[in-house]
Image (cartoon, rainbow, N blue to C red; front, top):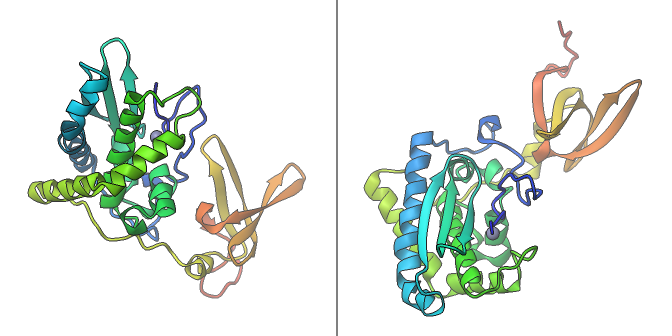
Length: 279
Ligand SMILES: [Zn+2]
């Protein structure tokens, strides 16, 4: 059984929280803290050892009372997929932390689409502050909560993020486990010279975001499977009205600023707002 909570791609499941933006698409206005692949892998390894030492080790005896012989194996995956999987035959709990998931949580735009961001905000975990350190500490806790949920026999098909899961997750935050994970991650990152900022992401004000768009801007939006390209017709308070030409007709969409991507050129001079002739 695999937890698809963290935006993993799969044939059988529609991703629940697939990020709207990929790190390489991030714009310079995204308040980003870029991370190299090597650094992301090192941070991923840190998530593995911390999950094993800080979450698994203290619970092992309790888990063995219910499931004798259960073991944990953590690894860093090459993509975004982040999940807990349990193998009934060999009693191994496997937790995978995706390299691209780690990178995504260093940037406000890419972090926003993940379930861990929504949980931190909704349940006020870590005072509701979104930072790379909080997001990654919470990711360890989230996956370990799935492990405990499985041990308790509360993981059922089609009912992954259920009441029992959230009861366990709340408890891990309430009993200090989540804080211990965060502290261990921070100390290890410092020791290894890895960046793991506690700085809260600055979410752009709607007014700042509004100022970035002009009538006539060439934009695109949508997921990779279905991208729409069009022109900004009107800049509203929180959205742009975008005309997408389709055959002879134009379809209009109201698109939130955060979901708009700028295309290669703009049809208005940003300073004079005069139309530019495109060649
Ligand atoms: Zn999950």
